Image 1 (cartoon, rainbow, N blue to C red):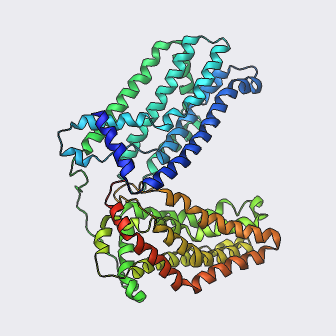
Image 2: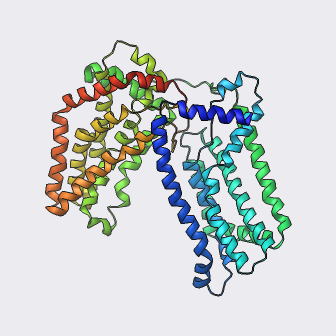
Length: 492
């Protein structure tokens, strides 16, 4: 059965409409993986001599054990945001004579092969070999290394349990932040010294290998819990809502002022407000709006005016970036129906443009108090807003014509990478890096004011030629229409 599952996933990968882009992004991820492997490998090699030199009177192994608590907390938080449970299209299998426990065991077993589980080994193994070479008892060192590997798997399955409960609430990242922050705070203020508890635990297992049974039992327990949680969801009607809530309606009559694009704007606003995934775009607006507070109060950045434009583009364009990069994938669930209607494609795209442009204007107005840190910051935000409206809105709409991945709006909101393809990774270059590069070039060659003028002119040109740009973008969408319909019919 495992062979059949692997065969199905292999065919799904190569037959997907996003195969070409999937290969490109996987090649990029391979280079990124090699980068992290080299870092962990280097850490494992130099860790013992570095600790011996920095703390000559202490045992390097004891020092490592004393900081394992912080590694576990950091690994858990990192996994929550970036590691997802391996999934497969199980609904077609539920009507076939395939036992659910085989499907669940396959999915959980596949999670063990995650890169996140192998990466720590590149630091653990070299450090362990060094300990043995330095005369530490081989059996104790090997047991200690095996314990760390078990802890890695414990973190793996604990992460999925936290994710399972997090999907039930609006702000899905709150549980992991509360758990990790609470444990760190209790340890930091010496209420409960978790770092000492973990250190003592690893020291005990090192000195008495028989106690390795403790992490083994914890791992088995977490596997059983994950098994039960996943098996409960393996039903065709598992996505149906059990609770009935009173429908809340909003008055969207003000959108009628936008004429023929009003119906599309109403659909987008309802889509944003009624789904967890799209609501995250609204929550991210608050983060983007306050983004400058991380930099502007620091004197270091006051002497870097060329960096103001990056913050300005990000701050005024946070909704544009988060919402716009998934156009038209937001509508992938009913895209076929939408395209079968007697509507003008340009009106559909114009509504997206108007929504993004309005968000830029509103965010600029809300960000005016940044003038407290200097008039140059306000000027940079102003030209960044013009550039966002005139250039970035068109760039992101054009990039949307290459989207080939369906979005599941029922999944959790924050830090969800389902439906993310090569387009979302590459679109950041023209959106953020190019304007920042242009601004920096003219800033260092001539001055701050002229650099602002150049960006403003580019934005104004985009606004002036908006109609022609939209016609070209619409033509690209029409050309890709049936490819997108076919791609959105697939479960990526």
